[in-house]
Image (cartoon, rainbow over all chains, first blue to last red):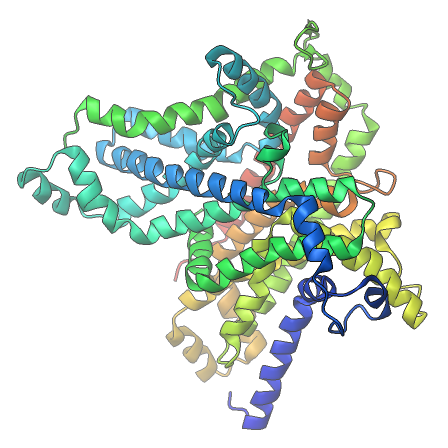
Length: 282
Length: 289
């Protein structure tokens, strides 16, 4: 199929236009966050005539955005880190030991991925209450407890992805050579195997970051005090508390979208590859 | 390779213990909770009622309505999302110069997350719509969708489509790019046009991507909660309350912990059945080339 150059340019422009239309909602939120109230109702699509940062300041305070941002970062980074390390270790052990127990546990991890969160949320909360009383440390309303729960929920997908990768592309001969050279199992895993897992590690990190950063239901059940709120929680609190003042709300939404867009632009290739790989293997 | 038991335990036990505490134990205690009547307070007694919680579900009109509504929502959304995602994927796997930019832009909504998306669209379909209506006078299309029962339901479909289409597009792209150029060229030499190649060559070869996408959209749509909370809150007048929200409200708002848990278990059975049947059906149609 050969088209004339003019036709090609037109098709290119049409595709870009389509994509711009697709992102109009994001554009509207960001643009309108800078407008004064009167201007907002004048023309909702136009660029602001007078930029005002008034609503950003208001939103920053009312939402306590920096606190929420800090909490979200802490929970996401630590939980994803633990999921990656522990799932890689577990998956490698399952593949290499290849005994009945490993097969059973692996099957269990995969099967339970079908359980919707709603099915276990209530009993899990009861259990966490009892754990809190029993051990005398808060499992609920603490970032540590939330991280603990994310690791449990992330185990299935993490082990599944590492398991598939190790089985198909980590040669046993390499490991045997390392053992002959005197590596023990611990050194063997961290020095030889783990570095080979880099590409699948990136996939697991990307998928878990998207999931945990945006997750709302689990934190809404566990975190009650203001100082522990993550971004989605702070947002729902913000929308629930005030009769919606759209200027302020849009400033708050802009705050939450911008970090996501920056993250996306920085590691775009990894994200698209990771999401595709994760879905195809899932 | 021989592995000592000590190493085995050290490598697998930490994760498996956490997994059991967080997923396995609550799953089984949940079955226990579904057999009692309890208001969730530690001091109140849990009264054993047997299977009557499950029997009650069949006469719970609100739950059954939300189940039908969720099914309808899922069917419509799955079709729209997959058709749109496939169209996008075909568009950005052509030799267009802007294909990479287009991919990037179309995929963005998926990263923002259901709750925030819902709030963004609450503005677009609510306030912004009525403002446009006031300006243009076309008030029969441009009005606050979220106060109208039918349009609020459509709003759920629009927002979910917006969220998931880019994500599924990425999966379809992976499938389309895996088809070897030889096959396509051979088809073109034989005189197959664009549609012919798409329907008779490309679609059968990306059956595995279709299976994955149907699986993901089906379960995501059926479990939808975040968008429901932030976009419509189940309203107006409970007309957009989906199953997840119904279960959440039964347990945590109405404090029917036992009964709500019975619903949660039924929900699990439905999801497991749907996804297993779907994977079986489309899985059988996969072709290898």
